[in-house]
Length: 445
Image (tube, rainbow, N blue to C red; front, side, top):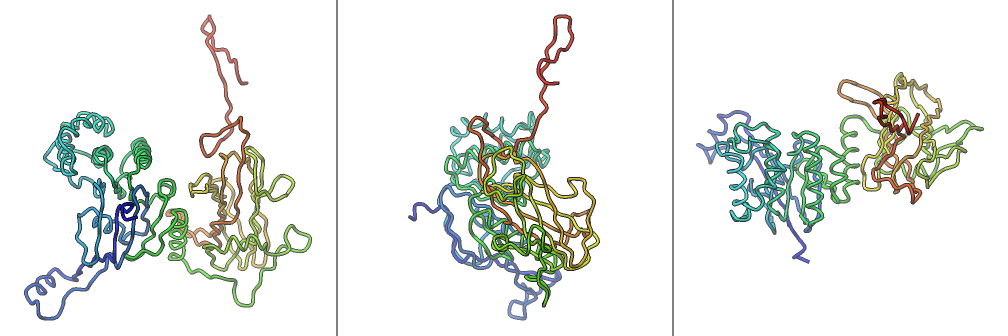
């Protein structure tokens, strides 16, 4: 079993001394037996982890959570204050841009230097040089000193070197965020090939979609400690819920003495739906001003749909109750795949609908109607109701956010296979040039 472990960390701690003034550092150095002029800051506190070979692990958390510090200790850039760490295998890392590069050396010289530092022979680097240069795609700059490179060129060259030196462990810390869209797509594709080859990948990114799609396991860190370690989808949900809770006052239930009135008699619902309440119990975020009584996926006849045919017309229905007067409120839904990839997102703003107002005690029905043009598989719907606070920075107050409101599966006709997550309707035309040079349409109108 030990042979299956790539990285083993036990009670890892990293402490920095912080000083209010530069002179305090000097006082403490010159007067070691007098009072301390510093205070301890724990970047990491008693972190214990085991990462298996071939595992893909995403580290998420707010700035200052300790993610980068942990990865720097794993790579040997930093020394821990306490605890032990054992790494089995060759590490390639993309931490700070240009780290490990000599600015006075050319790109090619740095390729060889980095390869040799990671244990590759010159002959092995000769074999890989053309692939590295082609992947980096920085043209004649490969022959120039790297001090002349832009941040994007640094990222291209650094990733290309690390991706082709056959590492056992690849560590990526936000290094891909500086590249253009084409470069990022190449990197993600290359990383997936490395995963198929059994490379252990540790990935830090604020791109939650990338963490969901690339990582099997997610580690959520807060103030230098691991607060969740499990499937990446759950880690992302907990991270998002924690961010929401940190930005607003959250209540776990309705105000004292108040109960949900439900939809009036003769309506579609007569009160909160038990199945929905069971689903919503997971990481629900509310502020007590309004709530979802129910969220359902229905067919055109109003029947619930645990299974949907690809291309079928459906209705996503929100039942809402207001507990306070709300002048402006918006709604949104997310449809996510079983592994947490954001397949579809829409909100009332995207759909060019005006902001709504809600009256205390009022019950409302909101319906989204669309064709379910999704790839075969299992999906989850998240429902969101929020009050805009600052549209310039997309800051909102969540009235109710239910990350796991509805689950359903999509089945497709075997003759109509979808290769992407989503299909949309296309108006297709095909034309040809006639002998007299005119354009003649042969397909489409």
